[in-house]
Image 1: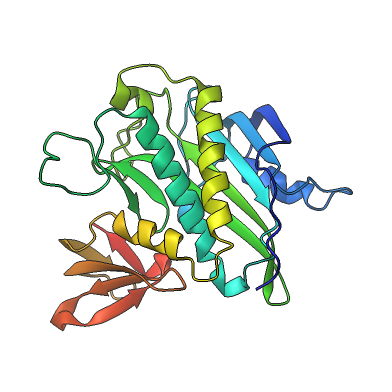
Image 2: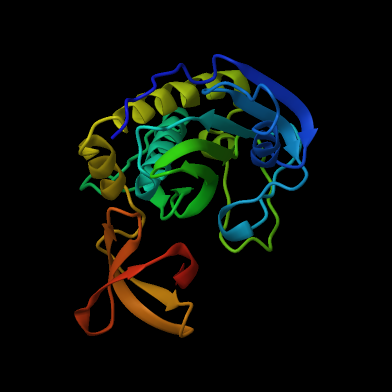
Length: 269
């Protein structure tokens, strides 16, 4: 593993009123001389073509939510360790959400009745009681065996209170959950703090802190739930056991076989 390049995240930042996508804009800026520095944060009040996992559109009312992309140079990670950045981002967003929701619980506990549960829906959505509150899109570049750059794109519902009825999964926001308006500057500061912490954890060779926390807070972990195999289009009941080292989902499915799935081959029902 290469030397970890510690950098203060968000020290250099820029906010745009409107852009097609902060991720797309950062990719374009990587080809400009000089490119933005590591830790550079680009945010926008509105994205006209924001997208999430598998090209899905991200719905957001202008000025209501937090949307941004962070540029990193994680040369300490091999290309097959890119999933660690998903863990970094998901855990940082999850903990940020928790800071703004009173009386939350991260895991099922005996006294958790009536408390909102914040969880990570693999591969990179954040849910509150099963309702989507944030999404993550990570893009990477590779040089040799190492990651040369990574862009962590985050969309976090803050003050939006109405969402399209056509969404595949019901959505919520910090304002709906906390019943108060959210200061987006305070939200950004909290998010950057948690991103800084978890990104530095990715420098530890065994990734123990990242992996234990991520596995513990997975949505539907150890619950018998319905899934669809997108290759065969068959629906089945399975037990989500976690993820492997490459970030593939581990499911106890039909006949009790433990099977791995990529994001494009399995759907939560």
